[in-house]
Length: 116
Image (cartoon, rainbow, N blue to C red; front, side, top):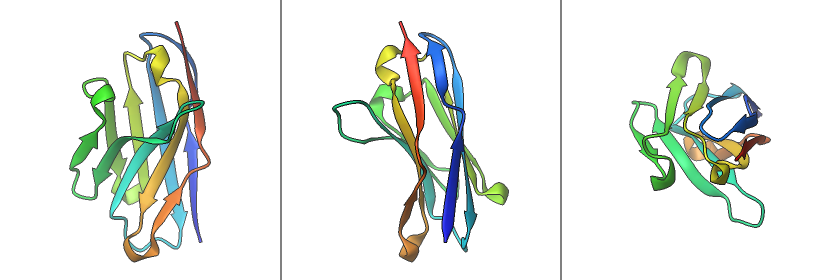
């Protein structure tokens, strides 16, 4: 059993910042990569950022230069630092952890609302 606990969402004005955290616990032997996705009302879930165990990162074009993903391997925790937030960043943000042959696990989601 694997549990993911997210935190850090909330309401912020445009131009503001938020930091999301996602801690994984349970039957974890190794993590391939960790990432964040988001889903806005009426839209499909989309990838925001990914980070591998070695620290390689990948970002959606819409967040490049504004969001930074990082991870603490010792704590099995992934972070998403979001700056210069825009109203279009409003969505439910989900963390995802890939455990190789054990597959993907998703967090419960945390709401991020950016007001104009």
